[in-house]
Length: 87
Image 1 (tube, rainbow, N blue to C red):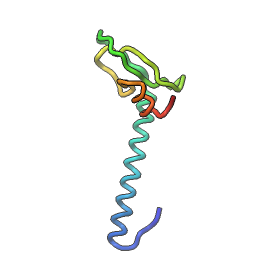
Image 2 (cartoon, helix red, strand yellow; image 1 turned 30 degrees about the vertical axis):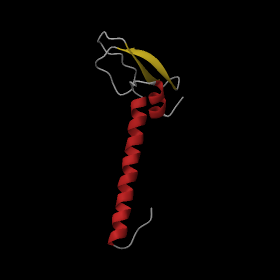
Image 3 (cartoon, helix red, strand yellow; image 1 turned 135 degrees about the horizontal axis):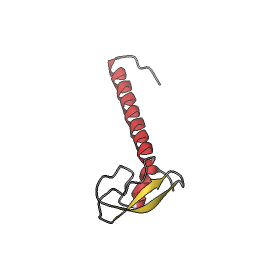
Image 4 (cartoon, rainbow, N blue to C red; image 1 turned 180 degrees about the vertical axis):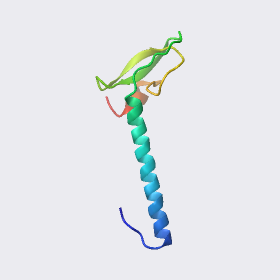
């Protein structure tokens, strides 16, 4: 980290730190949601969805009941792969 001298330099340095912290928090959130278990939910709809399976390291298909899910519930396999950054 570079320490800037002067008011404008300190402002730019502060913005960079805030940006880095936000990107780190977003990456951690993505990792955490990929660790969540698959939840079909108690309702009776049969909606085709995808989840990241921590044990196999790949995105799998399941049928979502339509309620009481978690964030490890993706509409497409591409979205699952993109968010969880795995294959």
